[in-house]
Image 1 (spheres, rainbow, N blue to C red):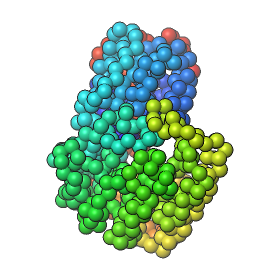
Image 2: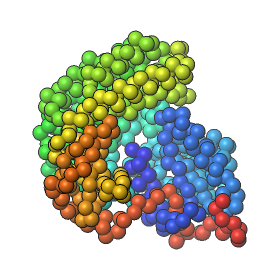
Image 3: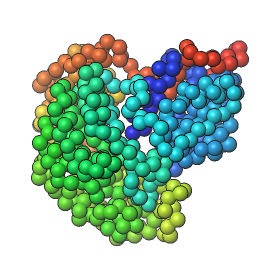
Length: 472
């Protein structure tokens, strides 16, 4: 979701006349932040500290901070880093160019945080980083009340887009050559709650199947409490919907799930996985798991390991619990010592890595369809390997040829299964050139950073930096 927002920010700035900086001396640096974990705070203020001497040498340079951390910290950012020029929240991304111009004109920081959504992000211009894959938001915000999560208080209550708007955006992406669309929502399963249709998400998946030229449809993230059979059926019966599911578990302990206010229990979670695999035997299922939630006992943690063994995840994002001020969990008794959390975390990582490795080994000898990705890059110049994603979301490193381009579709045969990826070192079974590959070849030969921007060609220019000073 933050990547999608960043593409919108870059699109807005380009529309206002900015261009990506060609060197390490940008006139504008934008931080789009997350607030889910404490490390995000540390990284932001650390990076701002590094920029302080740069800004001192180049007073015309502007620094803007947006996203969830900006929504949370508000005036705290300019107090701790008074050299920041603009602070904007999650609800007013579209205001950034105006705020930058106002900060230049007034020669003082502009802080604007709105409490409700001003413009749905997907209506804003975008600078996409990929010719072959695109994000489409179906909703923003969240109606859940998980005790560890700060997102609902920053992103607000769920707001749904109408299906026609979503499908029109997906069609527009396909018309530009995009082959793969990922539907985004804080909780995609509850899509439709705003207009009273609890089956809306399954209907939306089926409607995506009618878009000619759209080869792959993914979505993230669903919530187990809202996962219904009609969505499983839509996934299984709609040809272009990928048999991939990322569904957060968070804990395998029913006691901890209750304390987390997750509204489901481990039995229901495993039952959903059973039904998914009955309908789609080859589905790759990934998850999120938190270790060290307040009050978690060794018995609770063992329950998480047990669910992981039963679930046979293709991969898992594992996290050590991060205490976030303003969340109910931050005030709970039983905050665990760091060394206990670290030890449990290492045991969990070892288990999920072992399981994903075992699962990946079962793919050896199979032919897989891979959408070649520029973001993954050429893995090894010595072997000539390139990379991309299989339909089930697995990362595949394969031996490319000079004719293969990002955005093309290839079929290699898997020769090795590693814990986090597949390797295909034999010749390609097939290579299909695509319009997305043509677009990449025509102009997307490198991935340009979207946060380092040049001088605007419209509006008052920043004050020039002092002569003789570089970026530092």
